[in-house]
Length: 268
Image (tube, rainbow, N blue to C red; front, side, top):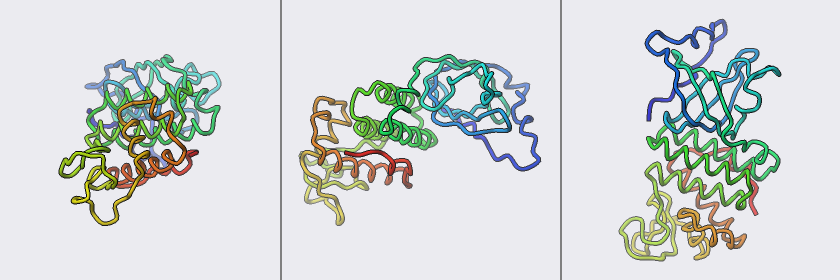
């Protein structure tokens, strides 16, 4: 994955405009598909848009004038939107020159608190994972699919979130095991779970402090990882709560830090 084009720090008195002038060696434009992970203000009328793109990984680009009511971008560059983009290379930040809507997911997500908090957690996780993962196009497809599923209310929001988290971690190289022992490969199912060891563990490999999830929770986790939505949608509330805790622990172990927005997600 190409290096992230970081926003950098703008000190008081800096002329941020100078960072946006294309260099003579990088004045070309390029097209790509992207999803908007988040935005933040820059100057009086602009925003920095954090994008996860299909072809260039995570990109931070300036949308000039986007905060004006007369902006040609409208709501296309709001969080969770899927867009076709034309960007121009800049010295430190790229510049959004065109944006066309591919998937208008923002309203369907923002109109429901559960879907909104799940999407926010997905966006935060994606931003962190694509800083360290090289699987840019695969991560893009996962995020775009999750936002689309949330906006259309295809499944319970918390299940879409946990399925995304497990698949994103697997794509980044941290695929968990929910049947065979993650350490020695002994056939399962097993009744213990260890995030440091990679998932289910047999009695011989079980370290102190391992969780003891129910069989229903382990079945749900396996279904979420593989996309078995018939099993996932029919799961009980207890299994969902239990599996959510294990997913959060597994995510935190591999990211080496928590995802703050997860604590705001509505759980059954």
